[in-house]
Length: 166
Image (tube, rainbow, N blue to C red; front, top):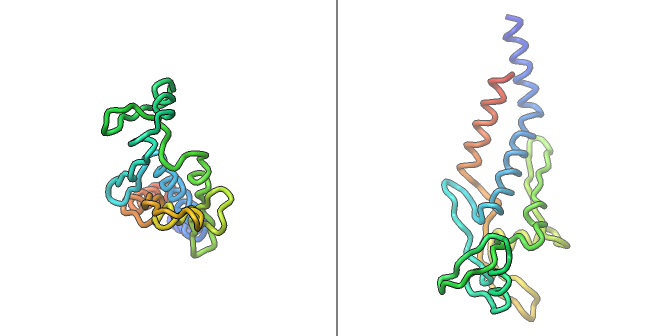
């Protein structure tokens, strides 16, 4: 009986504080993985729209791509292009993904370098108008944070695993 009471106390402690860190940590890892995958995973991976530097590089980019040791991509025209991943110019946006715990809430947020209130992250995640007022353009959606059935399953499995190890 004492063993049962001890396990129930451990489970209660887990659900009153540790579970938030598990959920936040899993979400942060999952959303950062979107940058490595170059797409967002709900039930399956939806790749982001490619960027012009890979699909239609300028002549200067073609020369760099053929002499670099990085990953190489071939455009539809058969031109070998630079392998720089999408949304990773500085890496700041992906690395800015963090979670904050204020029970009963877990907030996941991201911000671009010098970003005012997450506007850069939001326009990349949702798509929309970007750039200066004089040179605006439509940014395609490249979602990296959002609801995900896969993330929900990962969190559920991690919680089960932690509970089994109490």
